[in-house]
Amino acid sequence: MDTNKASQALPPQGEPVGAPPPPPPPSGAPHTHGGEVIPPPPGAAVPTPPVGAPATAPAGVPATAPAGAPATAPAGVPATAPAGAPDEAQEELYDSGILAPPSGEPIIYQDKRLKDGITKCPSCGSSDIQLNISTGMLRCNYCQREFNEESDGIDGDISQLFGLKMGSGTSDIAYDASDVVTLKCTGCGSEVVVDTKEAPQARCHWCRNVLSLHQQVPNGAVPDAIMPFRIPKEQAQKIIEEFVGKRRFFAHPRFKTEFCTQNIMGVYLPYMVIDVNAYADFRGEGERETRRYTVKVGKSTETRYDADAYQVGRAFDLYIDDLTLEASTDKLDQTSAVNSNNVINAILPYPLKETMRFNANYLRGFTSEKRSVNRDSLQGLAGAQVRDIARFQAWQQATFYDRGIRWTSEDVTIKGELWKTVYLPVWLYSYFEQKSNGQKFLHYVAVNACTGAVMGSVPIHKPKLLAISGIIQLVGTVLGVGLAALLLLGGY
Image 1 (cartoon, one colour):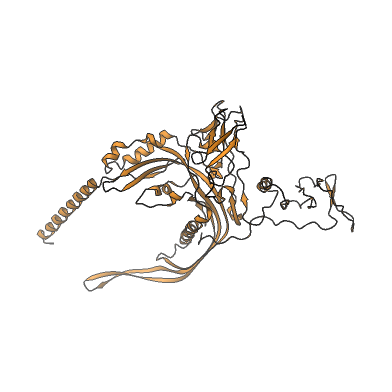
Image 2 (tube, rainbow, N blue to C red):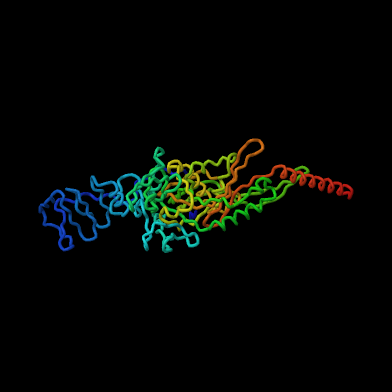
């Protein structure tokens, strides 16, 4: 996460970004002739086009078609949505920028380019496509052609981010939505069931084409963007083995016997990624030391200091880029008595500027976990992290006050925020420990599949740990007693 200049819990948002719909044209609206806009004579009546007749518009200016609706919009100003237009058509127009979204939260639709069903190789038409980790590109397993998806394209200049914007993948989950989706195979016409709980793909049992789910469904299975795997399984195995090897001395004997990296899993985990444009204003009292000295108090001495006190204020713009939050209920539950899944946070960050638009073929050969948390549930956590970032930034700008600052006012205003959902790749090793007292614990070792960062936990052999601790304590005690005796005998 990058930041250059941060806040309290995200407040209610203002008006959505985008120009307001233009007013209806006045009586005597202009008409076109040869691509040129020609105003009618003053007072001239403008005939109403017949019902169903297409409206004309100047070159380059999109027109709306419903009967009686204004035919044109001023250049550069989005038109209002035509009444009664199909929802899918409206969404495509919103995504292209031709139409301004209705009042509410502006949605960035990322799932309109690829349709559900067969995704074909652009060279030979095969649907047998999967990720080539060594190049990070999609590869056709038939003709070996490699290609890639486009960059997700959601990010922009954070300083120009105002109001609330969100990728369509962040839409609220319908918790009663089914995990099972039925797709119609365009190759043979049969119906194929896709279990999104396992993967957003299935192979047609008749024609053997691979069908992919790309359109976002209300169960949280399809994100806005994806970061493909870059580190192959063999390299991840070596990283995990080195990590465990450094902790092997105190590891439980059963774990050392059973430890094997062949069963590591490549998994895509769901995250919410947030950009924030904010303004912070901090006020407080700071101290700077001017003198330090020692005074004798009875038989001991004390170190004292003199300091100047100042009224301190810091106001600054705050741009937070790619604040990353887990979007899975079980990963947010970091109960250390049950598992060590909090290690997932320790392998951040990812190179999020290199994410791709979601394509289900990136998931082939790996597992994935559906998003199970809505944006509203993460607002408090996001606000707390934004506050921490703001506080740190304020400290960075006030190093003159070496005795510290006591902030009496921390005011942060969120001017704009952008939310999107992303699948991030992890190589995951897990080990289930059954303790002697009957307790159960699930250990994880996680590897960032882009950067190679690793963190995890291993079962500890407590008797060995206590024995070594006792020996160290005994040796320390013996050395301490010996040193004291030596000092007494020496007359010190």
